[in-house]
Image (spheres, rainbow over the protein chains, first blue to last red):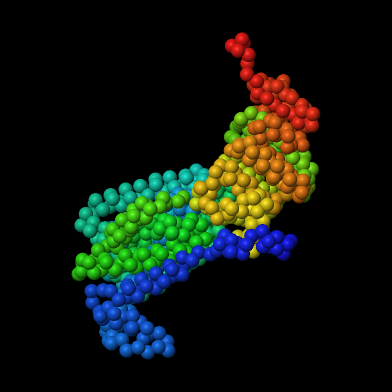
Length: 362
Length: 262
């Protein structure tokens, strides 16, 4: 049967037309090149450290079997490796995670305006951090490890769990719309509690907002090691569901008639995207804009199939956030511009220009 | 080639019974036309068969209960063309038809060369090859509808459910789409259940008709028995004249009330 059908199809279509019909995206190599360029640029630029053009030479010199006289001292290399590189990699990891989570959320809810914080991950993380900064700051002041990221992580997961339980109680697991509305309600409630706490503890408002606006400046290799397993696991699960996200594009009912377990797909994707988002938020703060804009940029250039959209969103998201982090550390030196401000400042005009040339597809 | 038996199929939305004890048996290759006014339960019955809405009663395919089969196996047995399909504007024709191969792909798997060849084959057989790389948003209503039928055919299901398959098509494309289904039925023994508003087309293509009214079958049998002026007047509330052509075709023509009656 297979052979017959293949032979029949070969006679029907010229080879070139067939290869074009099913061709893989050529954008993935371009996106990976962007990531590599972004990493090198991110390692080159900073307020202190070696002369910028010596950094790539020093990086090449560290490769196995390669020896290059870069002129970079060990102390200078320490600045690159211990300060800049964790920050660059963390930006890449967080950008990749927020982008693939945003694209996945947009897929399961069939809503292009959805971002990774839809079901309350951001509000929960914000509340968790606020609780640490207000009621628990004095009690945890002498702890060897800052509890804010851990509390933010679990608060984000708990908030999304509450949203899902509330939404599912009213049929949200099936329709998706109820789940989104539950997310709006729970987010409002959590934000109200956070605002109340801040109003009662106004002395920490600046500290809390500094956390909320996002920061990569304190990134360490430890942060990278903490967040990486979550991001790898979440991304792997999401990538394995990209075919199902394409199926959901024809609506829940039709997807059911094609054999798709719609409720299970939605639950698994939401869990994976939320877990990764919560991990990213706990180390970087709330970096907005990336999770909604990067998937749309990818749709504009490479089409809307989730098979291309998810891996490309990861790669472009990583590159975008690494590059967006560079102006923040040099423009207002010695002060830092919050990364969330930079992403919106750079991304919004770029997105508007793209919108002028092409309508955003669904 | 598969037979399908529906016994006492009942659908309730809360306290409202939308389909009441529907019972019909279709042999392999048979075509049953569901007719009836809006809200009669035609679409709901089809949606119950494919598992979109819950129902009671029994639905057997080739003598085995459909409910006992896996989700993907059910999808591979019964293909469905909805009344108002959702076609993502930016999906290509080939990507859309490929969705019909989903029942054959494992949960974490991906489509094989065989699946791609099948889609290419279906596209060519339906003369849709030129739409393979086109975005769905750039196609006309008729072209989109033919791709929806192509998607259903790509499942290779032996049973095809059509819910108003030609409502968006002009008369030429209506005939083209129905002729296509008729040819597949003839060549591959496809068993068809279609909900249709056009009574003449329903009678022309179906072996039997079932007239539903408020969820119950009120008349069933060949077109010559069901498409009667008095029956249609009673359940549709319309005046029609029914003509029997020399070739056996039943033609239903709406009539206007005489001006003198107004």
